[in-house]
Image 1 (cartoon, rainbow, N blue to C red):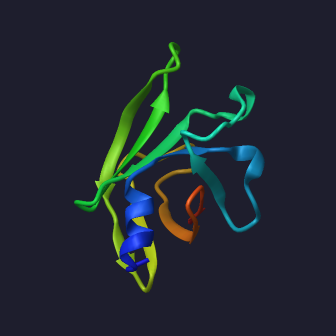
Image 2: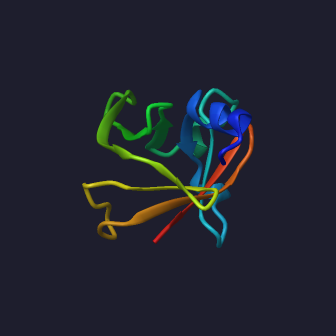
Length: 110
């Protein structure tokens, strides 16, 4: 992930979780600006910043996204890793970006 082009792609987009695309390897996030049918748009987003922060956002009743947590991400062995303070339904988890392209991000949650 240390490649400058890959990093730029990661940090210049809002990534939306498309749970229907999830694989056994992890949760699939897509570029939120892409044409994703509303019925396939769940309520979770990730936004990575070049300063090393990552924000988790969720949509409310009015479908506007708002920040629910923020943390720092780091490049560990070529994979982006981060852990949010607020637990999700399954408790506190560590996240690893295991695959990344221009319009798809796969995140393993442990």
